[in-house]
Length: 113
Ligand SMILES: [Zn+2]
Ligand SMILES: [Zn+2]
Image 1 (cartoon, rainbow, N blue to C red):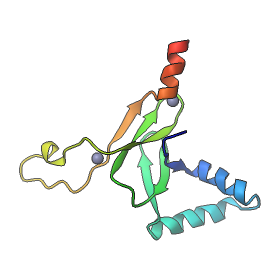
Image 2 (cartoon, protein in one colour; image 1 turned 60 degrees about the vertical axis):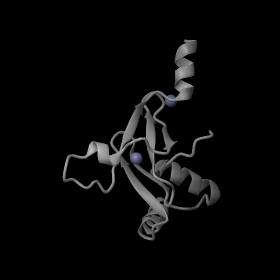
Image 3 (spheres, helix red, strand yellow; image 1 turned 60 degrees about the horizontal axis):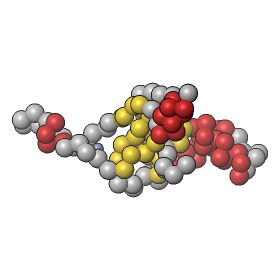
Image 4 (tube, rainbow, N blue to C red; image 1 turned 120 degrees about the horizontal axis):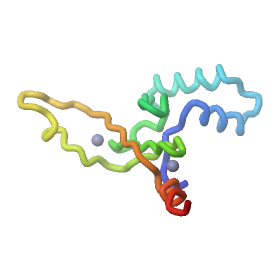
């Protein structure tokens, strides 16, 4: 996997358990909450993938969701021009955009079959 991906709670739980097998879910949840409050982690609420977390402080970017394999990929950069989207008199401060489709791996699989 070359793309950095935001993680879902289940994936974080899995990773935490791999390091500390005795760790319980409540502890992991508590730590995630603390990291979000401290600004280390960013909570993303994705309309299809659900709640995800990623490291904060990254450059502005968007996410791509693969409908086939249920994976989320980070898309670097942004092609959206806030000023072009806004109507006269509006000041756009931020935006959130999610892309959907079929990822590279699934596209290849589709071509083979
Ligand atoms: Zn896929
Ligand atoms: Zn953007």
